[in-house]
Image (cartoon, rainbow, N blue to C red; front, side, top):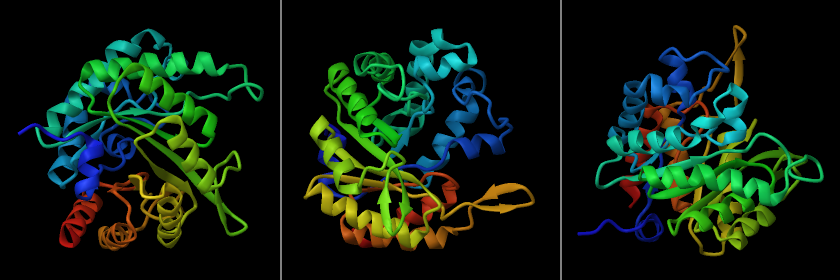
Length: 298
């Protein structure tokens, strides 16, 4: 039987996305500030191992290691000419772990600058930057495109439009939020309701949030409620950090346990979040607990 599209699947049953990639690679020897996409070519076995650990944990959505894969971001490392080859490779490595019952999620992060008038990049230029990366992810075998960690609805919308121009696959759009004076807003000051509506207006199939600035698990639950309300019955996604970051011996750490994240996953499912996953500080152990908790309430 043919596998349903991601949009079809998340309307039928809850799905679990994977968790953090960067911290997993740091544990395997990647230096902070190093080009993470270089590891696709130089350490493919480590990339596949991280993907496989999340797949074994019960995650059916496996996200490509391509967060900084636009020419603007790779160009900072002198690697702007690697966009096509390395994004295709990122998708192929994720597919090795996803298997026939999983979905490869082509990951597209911020382009690293601001749109006009705050920056020098036009919307048309940005759409082309995103389209180049997205086309390569699709060519490598992505089942959906994720435009993530966005603060500016204009940038997110450009990414979604670029994805729609490059493919007919489902497109996911996610923001990062912070809490100020009791309200959730992006760094650009956009409310949850306006941000989510902008994503759907641009053509997203699924919308929500990943990551957050100093948000507690209770904050993520409240954020989830606002996302569901703004989505008005359309599919949603939330990938929280493992709690708010803390400092210990000069290093950042996240102290939410797998049990804490499993409890949050149950609550997010109950309020109607379609896809639950993890972001900063989450590990395969966290995601295994979240996936199991989700299965118990299906």
